[in-house]
Length: 205
Image (tube, rainbow, N blue to C red; front, top):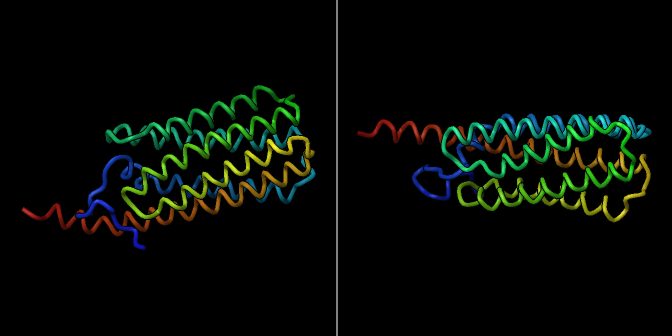
């Protein structure tokens, strides 16, 4: 299964140029998730206050990267709705955690679960659109499934304790981060393969 366009002739439509052009943001988003996952797992006896700050920091950065991608997509008149949705959810979640430092463990659990579920559904929806153009959508869909599964786990056991929840968040961030890095690198490879074809097409009178 190659990384070529599924529309033939090396052409891409819809939101694909924006995603490919922002492959670095996808990789960076994954690296940040991995870093926070490692920190969380290495520091499992984290306090609720520190856990709030870690989640708020990641959600805010994640939202900002989505806003950047949405802005670039809108400039090219491409589909940017799901990117804007992820950005709004991430930034709101980040601001809310910083504005509510005395949040309880149970409230934090439900907030993280809501953020993960909404983000997961948006990523799966984006994957269905991505599959019409290139063969890298399975990674984005996998990231969405992981997010939704994590949200369900939190809702099922919301009173597991700060230590357990911290471990869950750390594992989730690691899996999600690795998946996003793999997707970003795959998009980068696809963009490099499509560039020569685009150049050759441009040179045809």
